[in-house]
Amino acid sequence: MSEPRPQENVWEYPRPPALVVCERRVRIELGGVLLVDSTRALRVLETSHPPTIYVPPQDVDLTHITPSAARSTFCEWKGSATYFDAIVGDRTERAVAWAYPSPTPGFAALQDHLAFYPSRMDRCRLDEELVRTQEGDFYGGWITDEIVGPFKGGPGTWGW
Image (cartoon, rainbow, N blue to C red; front, side, top):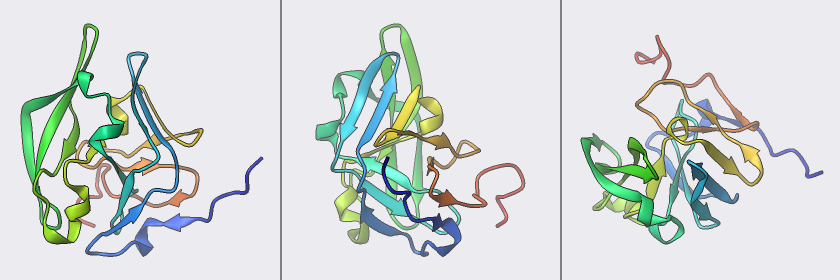
């Protein structure tokens, strides 16, 4: 059995956010298909949010990913995001992932990396640990045993 990971309190994450290497293997499944398998992911750490995981496109099965017309957003730190749908067999999940095709200079390493909402996938894992989803539909945080909140995103937390 491996040693427990050190606790990370999201209220100690910086603002503006930090971009760090993800030291764990990332796997994402939908409809019985492994969409992502990466050991080269990045994490964005921002005050009050569980980490968001970004994977390089080379580690994504892009045969199941298509640009989405569902939405676009703007982040004051990272820039304009575009969204992607996932299609596996007869199943279509809208706006399951986003990317920054032209991120701001401080987040240039995120260019074209995809971040997935764990709540819209069947299974997301960091190493062998199943990820718990962040409440709400705006943030795509990945909650694991070492991540401690409370977390922004759920009802009543928007004013934090």
